[in-house]
Image 1: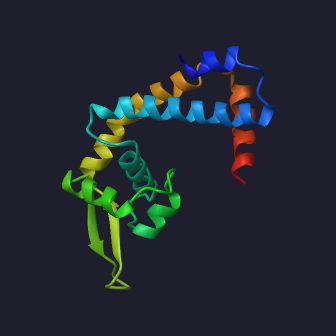
Image 2: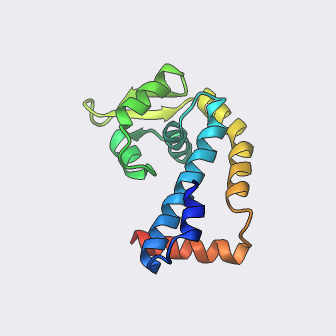
Length: 150
């Protein structure tokens, strides 16, 4: 039996419990839709996240700590993710000029090309996830979710 059906047929949940369950269900749905969209490109959502972080650097390299801080999923193993992206030639690793012990990561042209190809596909996923919300509801939900994350 689907969890949504259980939620509708079970005795009413306390509002806070229902909130947490709904957030978890929404997160699972969003993660699943995104993973499915990226699967054909043989890239995980975490790898995609790293590529978008590096694209946001606008050509400037980022170290592993910077990438880790900006990750959506802080539990990701950034070193392993970067290694997989290196194997796919989507990123390059270089030694920092100021501190030779520090390794920096930069997105490659191939990585940028992949993101250009993925952008409209990801936008379709975002549209699918938010299709039942109007712009005002999206703005309000973003505000509320940001409050929860504080």
